[in-house]
Length: 188
Image 1 (tube, helix red, strand yellow):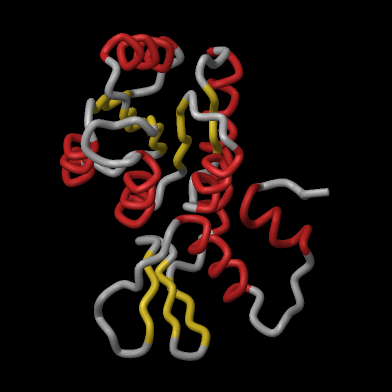
Image 2 (tube, rainbow, N blue to C red):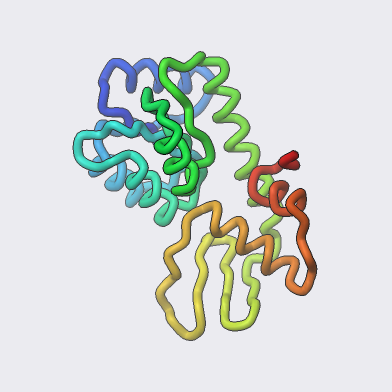
């Protein structure tokens, strides 16, 4: 299921239609509050979040979704300022797509994000791992530190990095190793 958060009704309908025609199940929300309510009912495989929401900044919502659902996130916006793009990606979003977008390119980005998530899930054959006083539950995508029963706050990319490091404890990882773990491909 793809969680689509877009406050513009026309754009929300158009994008939900594009995704639906490609076989994706879409849950569409007009606000951050509505989207967060949907997270209580179902965990999305991917979230697409507009930055200009009426009740919460899209980057902040993306962080909340990452902490609660652990799914990949694509930010949709007309804001092409470099600092905003960096802020969005550094917040844990997997991609930042500028409006207006080419539907075929957007669908390719959706497939890529879902493919990377699938690769991470496949690699998570070992559901519980420990390293020192850190316990990683790969099935639930949660991290526990010491005896604290409360999961540590961690966004999706941080979680993926931690899994790669714990899985390779005692081994030096190259930039290529880390980029494959985080993005599914080598970064030049």
